[in-house]
Image (cartoon, rainbow, N blue to C red; front, side):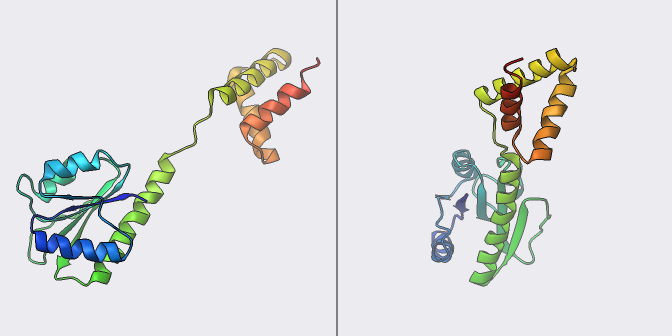
Length: 180
Protein backbone atom coordinates (compact mmCIF):
# COMPACT_ATOMS: atom_id res chain seq x y z
CA UNK A 1 0.00 0.00 0.00
CA UNK A 2 1.14 3.54 -0.64
CA UNK A 3 1.77 6.24 1.89
CA UNK A 4 -0.47 8.93 3.35
CA UNK A 5 1.09 12.28 4.13
CA UNK A 6 -0.86 14.86 6.12
CA UNK A 7 0.06 18.50 5.57
CA UNK A 8 -2.24 20.45 7.85
CA UNK A 9 -0.82 23.32 9.93
CA UNK A 10 -3.66 23.28 12.49
CA UNK A 11 -2.72 20.53 14.97
CA UNK A 12 -6.29 19.96 16.12
CA UNK A 13 -7.59 19.48 12.56
CA UNK A 14 -4.61 17.29 11.68
CA UNK A 15 -5.31 15.12 14.74
CA UNK A 16 -8.98 14.65 13.82
CA UNK A 17 -8.20 13.74 10.22
CA UNK A 18 -5.41 11.41 11.34
CA UNK A 19 -7.84 9.67 13.70
CA UNK A 20 -10.43 9.19 10.93
CA UNK A 21 -7.80 7.80 8.57
CA UNK A 22 -6.32 5.48 11.22
CA UNK A 23 -9.74 4.00 11.98
CA UNK A 24 -9.92 2.91 8.32
CA UNK A 25 -6.36 1.51 8.02
CA UNK A 26 -4.86 4.64 6.46
CA UNK A 27 -2.41 5.55 9.20
CA UNK A 28 -0.51 8.68 8.11
CA UNK A 29 3.15 7.97 7.36
CA UNK A 30 4.13 11.61 7.87
CA UNK A 31 2.58 14.74 9.35
CA UNK A 32 4.04 17.94 7.95
CA UNK A 33 3.65 21.68 8.48
CA UNK A 34 5.64 22.86 5.45
CA UNK A 35 5.55 22.04 1.76
CA UNK A 36 9.28 21.32 1.82
CA UNK A 37 8.67 18.67 4.52
CA UNK A 38 5.96 17.11 2.34
CA UNK A 39 8.30 16.93 -0.65
CA UNK A 40 11.06 15.38 1.46
CA UNK A 41 8.63 12.78 2.86
CA UNK A 42 7.13 12.02 -0.56
CA UNK A 43 10.62 11.41 -1.94
CA UNK A 44 11.07 8.48 0.40
CA UNK A 45 7.91 6.60 -0.70
CA UNK A 46 6.97 4.91 -3.98
CA UNK A 47 3.48 6.41 -4.26
CA UNK A 48 0.79 7.91 -2.13
CA UNK A 49 -1.71 10.61 -1.28
CA UNK A 50 -0.99 13.98 0.28
CA UNK A 51 -3.89 15.48 2.23
CA UNK A 52 -3.54 19.19 2.87
CA UNK A 53 -5.39 22.41 3.47
CA UNK A 54 -5.41 25.15 0.85
CA UNK A 55 -2.18 26.75 1.99
CA UNK A 56 0.88 25.82 4.04
CA UNK A 57 3.35 28.33 5.47
CA UNK A 58 5.76 28.05 2.56
CA UNK A 59 3.56 27.15 -0.43
CA UNK A 60 0.03 26.84 -1.74
CA UNK A 61 -1.58 23.64 -2.93
CA UNK A 62 -0.95 24.58 -6.58
CA UNK A 63 2.77 25.00 -5.94
CA UNK A 64 2.99 21.74 -3.99
CA UNK A 65 1.07 19.93 -6.73
CA UNK A 66 3.64 21.06 -9.32
CA UNK A 67 6.56 19.70 -7.27
CA UNK A 68 5.09 16.38 -6.09
CA UNK A 69 6.66 13.18 -7.46
CA UNK A 70 4.86 11.48 -10.33
CA UNK A 71 3.00 8.80 -8.36
CA UNK A 72 1.52 11.09 -5.74
CA UNK A 73 -1.92 12.63 -5.75
CA UNK A 74 -3.08 15.63 -3.78
CA UNK A 75 -6.32 15.96 -1.83
CA UNK A 76 -7.04 19.56 -0.84
CA UNK A 77 -9.48 20.25 1.98
CA UNK A 78 -11.00 23.70 1.43
CA UNK A 79 -14.12 25.71 1.98
CA UNK A 80 -16.55 25.42 -0.91
CA UNK A 81 -16.13 29.09 -1.75
CA UNK A 82 -12.35 28.83 -2.28
CA UNK A 83 -10.95 29.13 -5.78
CA UNK A 84 -10.11 25.63 -6.99
CA UNK A 85 -8.71 24.55 -10.35
CA UNK A 86 -9.22 20.81 -10.95
CA UNK A 87 -6.35 18.87 -12.52
CA UNK A 88 -5.32 15.26 -12.98
CA UNK A 89 -4.15 13.89 -9.61
CA UNK A 90 -5.61 16.84 -7.70
CA UNK A 91 -8.93 16.50 -5.89
CA UNK A 92 -10.83 18.75 -3.52
CA UNK A 93 -12.91 17.83 -0.53
CA UNK A 94 -15.12 20.66 0.68
CA UNK A 95 -15.25 21.21 4.40
CA UNK A 96 -17.14 20.44 6.49
CA UNK A 97 -17.17 16.84 5.27
CA UNK A 98 -18.31 13.44 6.47
CA UNK A 99 -15.63 10.95 7.45
CA UNK A 100 -17.08 8.54 4.87
CA UNK A 101 -16.48 11.16 2.16
CA UNK A 102 -12.83 11.42 3.18
CA UNK A 103 -12.31 7.66 3.26
CA UNK A 104 -14.13 7.08 -0.05
CA UNK A 105 -12.04 9.79 -1.72
CA UNK A 106 -8.78 8.37 -0.36
CA UNK A 107 -9.88 4.84 -1.43
CA UNK A 108 -10.58 6.10 -4.94
CA UNK A 109 -7.23 7.91 -5.13
CA UNK A 110 -5.30 4.84 -4.01
CA UNK A 111 -7.08 2.51 -6.43
CA UNK A 112 -6.18 4.81 -9.31
CA UNK A 113 -2.58 5.13 -8.11
CA UNK A 114 -2.13 1.40 -7.59
CA UNK A 115 -3.37 0.72 -11.10
CA UNK A 116 -0.90 3.22 -12.55
CA UNK A 117 1.99 1.87 -10.49
CA UNK A 118 1.24 -1.75 -11.49
CA UNK A 119 1.10 -0.76 -15.16
CA UNK A 120 4.49 0.88 -14.95
CA UNK A 121 6.20 -1.95 -13.09
CA UNK A 122 6.93 -4.52 -15.75
CA UNK A 123 8.95 -7.48 -14.57
CA UNK A 124 12.53 -7.13 -15.76
CA UNK A 125 14.19 -10.12 -17.34
CA UNK A 126 17.31 -11.34 -15.65
CA UNK A 127 20.60 -11.26 -17.50
CA UNK A 128 20.50 -15.06 -17.69
CA UNK A 129 17.05 -14.98 -19.34
CA UNK A 130 18.17 -12.33 -21.83
CA UNK A 131 21.17 -14.48 -22.72
CA UNK A 132 18.94 -17.52 -23.37
CA UNK A 133 16.73 -15.49 -25.71
CA UNK A 134 19.80 -14.06 -27.48
CA UNK A 135 21.32 -17.55 -27.93
CA UNK A 136 18.04 -18.85 -29.37
CA UNK A 137 17.88 -15.86 -31.74
CA UNK A 138 21.47 -16.47 -32.88
CA UNK A 139 20.70 -20.14 -33.45
CA UNK A 140 17.62 -19.30 -35.53
CA UNK A 141 19.54 -16.66 -37.46
CA UNK A 142 22.37 -19.08 -38.20
CA UNK A 143 20.40 -22.24 -39.02
CA UNK A 144 17.28 -20.75 -40.61
CA UNK A 145 18.69 -17.66 -42.34
CA UNK A 146 16.56 -15.27 -40.28
CA UNK A 147 17.26 -11.67 -39.47
CA UNK A 148 17.41 -10.64 -35.80
CA UNK A 149 13.88 -9.13 -35.83
CA UNK A 150 12.52 -12.25 -37.58
CA UNK A 151 14.13 -14.53 -35.00
CA UNK A 152 12.76 -12.40 -32.15
CA UNK A 153 9.30 -12.42 -33.71
CA UNK A 154 9.48 -16.21 -34.17
CA UNK A 155 10.29 -16.74 -30.48
CA UNK A 156 7.60 -14.25 -29.49
CA UNK A 157 4.94 -15.86 -31.69
CA UNK A 158 5.89 -19.37 -30.59
CA UNK A 159 5.61 -18.38 -26.94
CA UNK A 160 2.19 -16.77 -27.49
CA UNK A 161 0.88 -19.74 -29.50
CA UNK A 162 2.01 -22.21 -26.83
CA UNK A 163 1.04 -20.07 -23.83
CA UNK A 164 4.60 -19.92 -22.54
CA UNK A 165 7.06 -17.17 -21.74
CA UNK A 166 9.67 -16.12 -24.27
CA UNK A 167 12.36 -17.58 -22.02
CA UNK A 168 10.65 -21.00 -21.99
CA UNK A 169 10.29 -20.90 -25.79
CA UNK A 170 13.95 -19.92 -26.17
CA UNK A 171 14.96 -22.84 -23.92
CA UNK A 172 12.89 -25.23 -26.05
CA UNK A 173 14.51 -23.94 -29.26
CA UNK A 174 17.95 -24.39 -27.73
CA UNK A 175 17.16 -27.94 -26.55
CA UNK A 176 15.59 -29.03 -29.84
CA UNK A 177 18.46 -27.68 -31.93
CA UNK A 178 21.28 -28.65 -29.59
CA UNK A 179 22.31 -31.84 -31.38
CA UNK A 180 22.33 -30.49 -34.93
